[in-house]
Amino acid sequence: MLTLAIESISNNQLVGLFEVMLADIRAYRSGQPDVVAFKDGDWMWCEVKGPGDKLQHNQIRWMKQFERLNIRYQVCYVNHR
Image 1 (tube, rainbow, N blue to C red):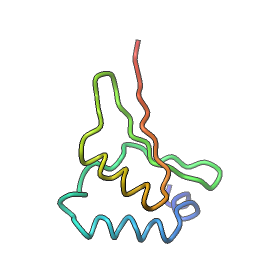
Image 2: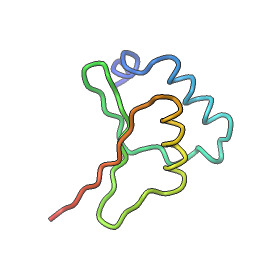
Image 3: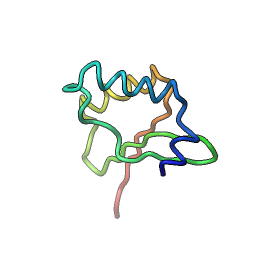
């Protein structure tokens, strides 16, 4: 997992993520997405939501930072039947 992260996450993105967290630790100590996915040298965050679950304010706050840092993310809604 560490090797995939080193190969996939750019230095600018990594520094940007740490800058976000350190700028306001209280606001960004939670809300990170559930899954980090790696494929073919690319990566993305994925937030998983079940039936009736919705995004929280802290998660939306992170997603705005991902957009600013050009980090791919996706919300995956799952439905079990």
